[in-house]
Length: 234
Length: 234
Ligand SMILES: Nc1ncnc2c1ncn2[C@@H]1O[C@H](COP(=O)(O)OP(=O)(O)OP(=O)(O)O)[C@@H](O)[C@H]1O
Ligand SMILES: [Mg+2]
Image (tube, rainbow over all chains, first blue to last red; front, side, top):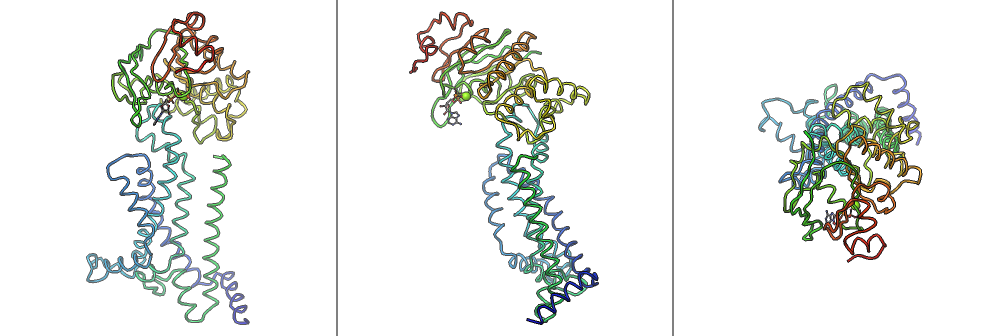
């Protein structure tokens, strides 16, 4: 028990004194996850919106595939990206394995279906609400998409937050394709796993607190967005 | 170029194997205010949407070529659709689509907000309005760009006596200024107050069209007499 209290005390000391390792690892985590988030949003938000308002032949199939991809175990994503990027794989020449770029690729694959799916649901509901009016007002396709994105921006932000939450706490895929290399690909989750194994609870707990704080912030933001939405405070 | 006349020839709308409208042949032309009456499920909403060009025919023809004609028309839906924006932004929306200047928008918004007595709610989210206030907002948003032709689907069904009078006055003023109006209502007294001419729709078919005095006082069809008496129609 004493060890644990000492660990917690040490962890707070690391945070308060802005320990170099802790700061470096936290910043790298944010950098990787935010990069993945930007890329994933650039793909998923238009895709989800498009799926909500455009009727085309294989629409249902695409949605089903998207939902299936959402359930993909991250470890398997890691494995697949590893194989693709490994020296003998199709993209081996790029030399991306065990770099932050590899980790970003894995995270993009993991969160794009999630963001697209949440976006699709929200935009589908909004489109059902607006459909008759926008048709009646003779809006063009771009005007419709613009209106939906503008008026659905809270849902889109919620979708992005869900993606961020999933990516920042993910460990399996990141570990496989990043390799958890010190000063290069070590991020919050992989560092916690490592330090816990090594018995350095102070750093592990300190990093854990940072991760918890980020997760809490995301949840609070999501909750706040949901509340403003339901109270009609658009 | 005027959107009138609009001519239907043997227009039919089928849904799920049933004919829900038609065959209907009629011409919408001239000036004034037409009241469309008929029991629940008669097809009034469907007929108005066909004339507006937002429901496609299963058979027969409609004379306007849909999209272009709609720019000079407006439609007020039976269940009011409000955008998830402020009251002012709702009123601005159709004007923005037409790229009206900021100054003109501001002036029209002030004018119409006053007419529907929502001037103190302009900055409020439209989602917080009551059912009746939403209906008034939807009417103002339809009228705000001075359409040549307006369809209103039971526009006063949620309104109290005073608001109903105000909307009726507003419609009469628009009619006198040359706007062609077609509205459905279940309120026979309202029909008498407003109509220049009236149509009776039963089971998807037009049973009588006549100038208002004749329609309400000496209808040619026994069915119209029965409807005005409140009898069950078959
Ligand atoms: N998409 C649809 N699929 C199947 N049936 C439909 C559809 N839309 C309308 N109907 C049916 O068509 C009939 C006419 O509907 P419509 O809404 O035009 O009636 P209405 O005269 O406006 O009735 P109300 O006075 O209740 O508003 C109804 O029986 C309705 O159930
Ligand atoms: Mg109706």
